[in-house]
Image 1: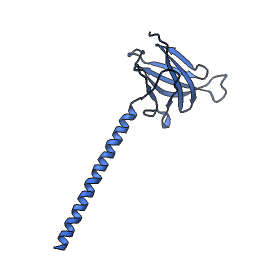
Image 2: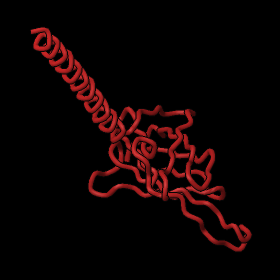
Image 3: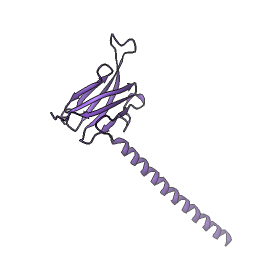
Image 4: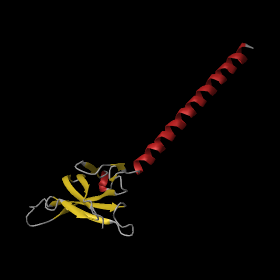
Length: 152
């Protein structure tokens, strides 16, 4: 009889532990999927003299949530890549060129704008926006985006 009661208590305790672990693991999975979903969304940024950092992922592909920024008017600026451009004045290392893609906002929906910024050409202006390159390295760029007040 004691053995039967002891077995029942052990079975009850193991059932409680399994259920608690299951709830904990379910919450962990739910949190991980929520974080992954948030990483797909571009982070919010501000117009004006506010630096916005965009980074590349490992292996040269853009990392989620690090490669794009969303602005109040619907503009989304995404870092497509950082290219090395050879030129006579740059030396053997070449010049780094940031390739950005603009969608939404004042940019026509049928054709996103592709912007190339480098140390020699650090600013771009069109579609009512001015994008300025503040710094660049092989895996990240820092830009500032402002509006010109004019819409195309």
